[in-house]
Length: 72
Image (cartoon, rainbow, N blue to C red):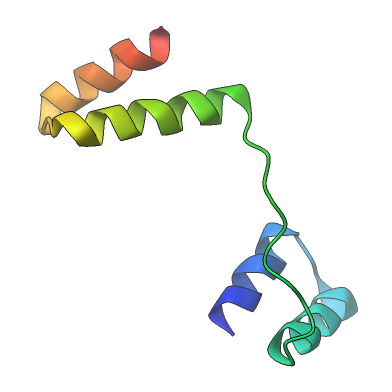
């Protein structure tokens, strides 16, 4: 139910469309969530975040790293 609810939220479904989607999801009639396409800024942030996690900076050091990384 949690994943069906998240999928319905990503698709911005409301009313009867959401009710139908949830019923199908709970019955196992739907497949995995549709692939979401990242904007260039989101892709860059995801990459910088992964790089930051590998280096494990904390607090102000992480903030400075992310600012520098996102600016290019």
